[in-house]
Image (cartoon, helix red, strand yellow):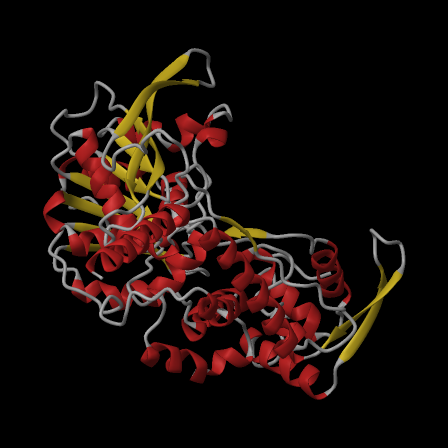
Length: 504
C-alpha cells in the first residue's frame, strides 16, 4: 500500500513539475539569465554636428514577480549617458522615469539627429543620466502587446454604452487569457515591482544613491520608490504629479484647468466681443444642455469614402468635444464659441476623421496591470462620479470598464499619501490637462522638504516648457540636481500668454 501511495505522490509530483514548466514562458534548454544580472555594452550615438557620443546600453534581468520564489525572469532596457567633465564626480546619477505607462524606449528617438543634444546633454553636465524602461512595455521583454480596439460605432446613431462595454471587456479578457496561456504571470506587472526594477538597476550599476527625475506616470513610479526605499534617493525632481490615488483623472480638477483658461481667454483682446454671455464655461454647459434636449445631425462628405456621412450631435457626442476638437490650447475657446453659435461643421469633420482612423489599436497588458493595480480608492471613485463635471467631460471610461478584466489591485493602503523627507522639487503647470494642478496641491503638505514651483499656464510637460522659455529656471533646476540647493528656484513662474485663435 505504501508503495502505491509513494508512486501516486511521485506521479502527482511529476505532474506538478510538468505543469509548472508548462506555465513558464521560458522553454529553452539553456538556463534563463539570473535575476539581478546585467549585460552592458557600448552604444554610439550620432551627433547633429558630426561625430559620436559614446553611451552605454544594457539589458537588465529582473524577477517577473518578486513575491514568487521561482519567478520567471524578464528583461529591461537601460541607457546610461556618462557625465561630462563639467560634472562633480560625487554627484548622484539622475535616474529619469518616463510617463505613460507606454514608454517605447530610446533607440528610435536617439536616431533622430539633435535629439540627444536637446533632451539629455544638459543633464550630463550635472551627473550620469540613466533611463530605465518600463516592465512589459516597449524594449522590455516580453513586450506584452495586446489589441485594445473599441469597435467603431455608427456616427449617426446614439452611443450604446452597454454594447460598447460588453465588446471592450470581451476583447480585453481574451487578450489577458492569451498572455496567461503563454505562461506570463501578469500579476508581476505593478508599479511596486517597477520601483524595485529601478533599485535593481541602481545596484547593478554600482550607485549608492540616485536623483529621481520623472513626470506623470513617471512621478507615480518615482513616488513608489521614494516610499519603499527613501534611503537610496538623494533628491527628486517631479512634474505632472500623479500621486498614489491619482491614476484616474479627477473630472472636476481636470475641468478646473479649462476654467482657468477660460478666465484668461475671456479678458483677451483677440476674443473681445466674441465671448458668449456668461462666459466660456457657461457656454459649454449650454451646448451640452441644448444637445441633450434637441440633438442635431450634420451631414458631410467623408474625405476618405467620398460618400455623404451623417454625424449625430447629442449630449454624449459633445462630451467628447468639450475639451476642444482642433487639438491645441490656443484653439479651445474658438471651438467652444463655434459650437455655441450652432456651427458643428468642423466638429463633425473631427468625428468623421476619428471614425476613419478607427482601425486596430494596441496597448500592452502591462499598461493595464500597472494602472489598474494602482487603481482608485472607493472614496475618491465616489467623489469622481458625483462631480458635476462628469456631465461635461469624460475622463475614465477605459479604466472603469477595462480594469475589471485584469484582476490587478495593490489595495487601498497603497493609495494613501505618505510623508516624505527627501528633498524634492515639484514643478506643476496650472494648465496641465492630464495631471491637474490640484494633484500637486494635495500632495505638497506630505513632502516635508519641498520646493513647489507653480508654473502659470504650464502644460503637462511643465519642466520642458520652462526649460525652453525661462533660462534662469534652467540654471536653478540644474543647480538643485547638482547640489540639492533650491534657493534659486522661484515659487511662482509663468509662461508667455497664449495667442488665442479667433473663430471664423
